[in-house]
Image 1 (cartoon, one colour):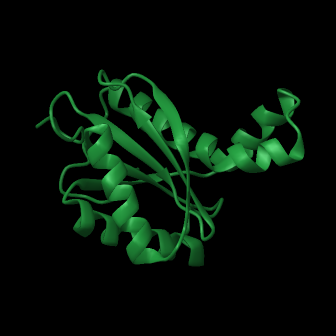
Image 2 (image 1 turned 180 degrees about the vertical axis):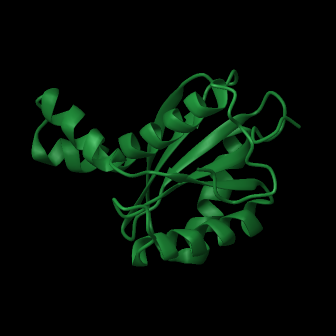
Image 3 (image 1 turned 135 degrees about the vertical axis):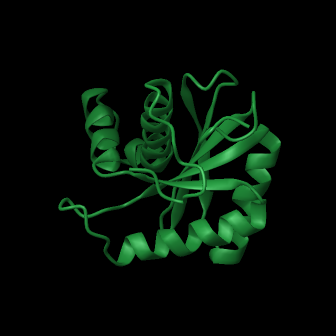
Length: 158
């Protein structure tokens, strides 16, 4: 098992957790690119952890990366604490390594990209969480490729 990379040759699932919707993305088998998978309605902590665990298994993921919404100064607010609780529940439900990854500005970048693509407000609302999950996962994959992966034994990467 590669440090911070889950099972050898396996994919990584990316998650953008929200109180209403959860965006999901998955890496390619070579851990180079992230593709948005979809959006899952958040029907409560237990159900969403089970659903994301099932998606990770279906995708052949050996690791899950969950976006951690830090404040701009790096501190953790109420939303971050909810995500940390969800990540722990997800770790127990899936049996996989769950890494918390700084997601500052991922939703804003997703929105900006969709505005540049001239998508309607309704279409943006449907895609926002999926694209945010894709951005979180892509940032993590880029970090791994840069040779800075050392997330073993830790739920939170820098």
